[in-house]
Length: 86
Image (cartoon, rainbow, N blue to C red; front, side):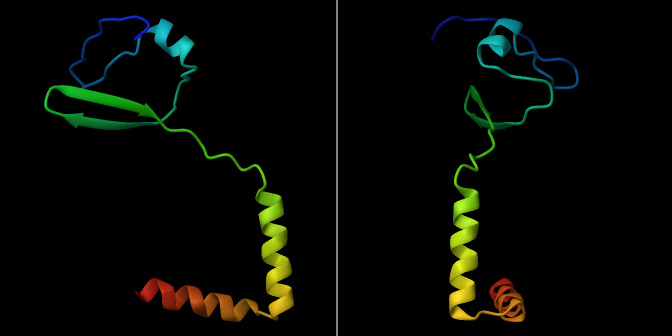
């Protein structure tokens, strides 16, 4: 642990993350966290968007597969409906 800071909880349950930690961890206004609590420990885990590197390649492969197999849009919609029923 690089450094220890002390903070407190407001009457509304809000906790301030010290500026030095926000700067070091690149935390900005509005970012989301998962909150995990057990016994006397609370863990905040910053949520990050997954990388979309390669998504264009994946979409192209999917389109090529669909075209090769002759799959129709209506067939995909029906398959989705069936999967949602389960």
